[in-house]
Amino acid sequence: MTKDNIRRSIRRLSRHAMESEKVIEAYLVRKVKAMGGLCLKFSSQTDIGYPDRIVLLPGGKTIWVELKSKGGKPRRIQELRMESLTALGFEVHVADSSGKVDEILKIED
Image 1 (cartoon, rainbow, N blue to C red):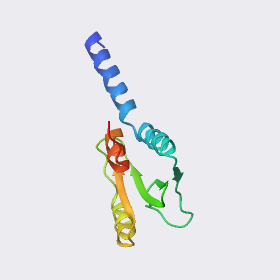
Image 2: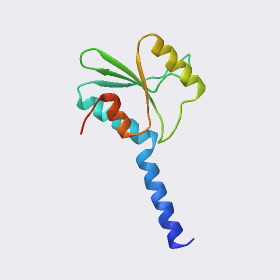
Image 3: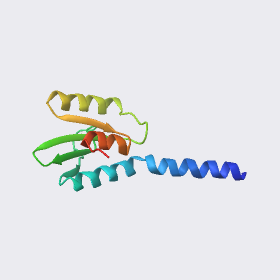
Image 4: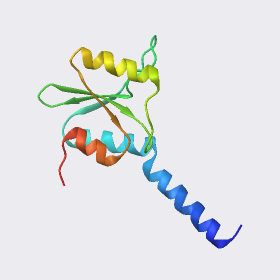
């Protein structure tokens, strides 16, 4: 492996580390907590496909958030669950970057 290939591999790994679902999820949790809210991990014992997090903000605002790595898309069952939650009147989003998290939470620089 050449030095250029090694450098490319390191850049690719570090870029992935900054755009991974886990990193974006940690960012969401940190930002919601800073706003005085709760960011609860959601896991249904009987149904699949629901968004990963329920965000509870001061003032009674509830937001469902599906987290994906950069450029990731929800699976069909996740799309259907999000559609049903939206039909019930809930706010539902997909976040694949820290910028998208800021958009969802309406955080400005």
